[in-house]
Image (cartoon, rainbow, N blue to C red):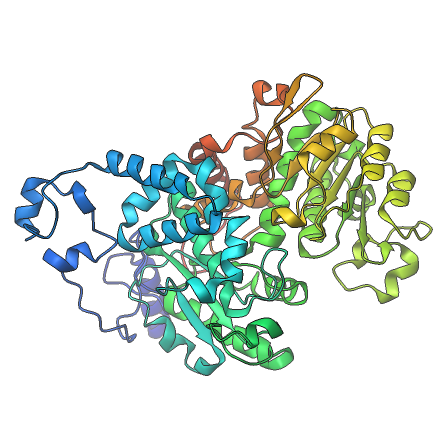
Length: 568
């Protein structure tokens, strides 16, 4: 017995390339290695050349291949004689994209580029991030998901359906890349504000991971988009002849959670402890459950709950320069009490608690939530879902947003309802009558679901509003002053946050890491930005912003003593 324990101890301490740990794949940092007895996908990797090289998006350079490269790689005659460098190809492609009037056409063109010339795609996206972000991400990606069956040409990730029950590990091994660092997974039940799009929700993981690379620096080959297909309750899709998913109603309850459990165990077995699994666009009733269940056993992150919370908290912290005081001095009102609303509220309460040394329960009293039935108060507590109960404060019932604003007198209203045009003129005017600089955050996506537009917020507040939205809005001139609306976009946080976790070798996500990410983002807002009414830095600097966030998150991981190997 003692000899066996000694052997195991020595194996753990010996970090040479020959040492192994149970589960996982070979560690890219050389910190540990996977067992060699696991079956792997029997792909034979060879150096591409000639015709095949031009069909391999990872290595294809198009007309940028030099004369020498054309000789070495047997490309003579397979390309026109002109040599066009990457920069000139980028210029030509941007001119071509700008000719499209329909955003979805731009999306399709960009996806086709990614499928034939990966490096040029990312060069294009990095250099033109402010212009192309609304195409590869919200709002255009929402329309792309709605029409994904019609525009589908080539699979860009893994589709794991109920047909693969009991064989999920086998399916994961079919993916040709073994060294995966980030997985973005969705079950398609709540895509943006568009509802259940089933298997067609794949556009979201694909788009998110493109941004992990372009904005955060994670290698494309280390990213894996996955759609879990358990059916759809969208009748329109079930009757659509071009629908690409299972034609059945969604499974729920034990069957659903058993399937997800098999998936999570297979991911850990195949890729190890340090792969980041980002849950994306799961419905509320599943999102909280999955995060709570696997948050203590896997490196998991829900961008709708935690990423949105970190972005909004950063905006609130930055806005204090314009509003004055501290977070604890202000009252916040949420319109919407789903996963985004309650996730943001909880992180704000945690930040207030940390700064004021008050219990989180006390800090929550500064925060009020309104759902579809009105203000969440103690009198409703028995009928509330579990994630809403902490926000049931003592107050008489209020049935609508306008009366709630007048009663609560918040410094900020934060829209996470997914219902458009709910911040009416009367609501904004009421906020402006209460506050010198009312903070209006209309966060619902896509644009059609935004609670109000930037122009409405500035006009109805007589130019005094501090405005941020989920989808982009153009600048607004009011009373001869140019107002630049901020976009509380999750892209500010998740690429840098995820990259920081990966670089630190973390195996769990802690709330303090989210706070560190928020503080890092808020610290990037300068006096020049404040002068324009902005509470987020411009996206043009997103690579540097992401690097700063990643460094802060990694530093916090080490400060917390977060393990940097797959052994706890």
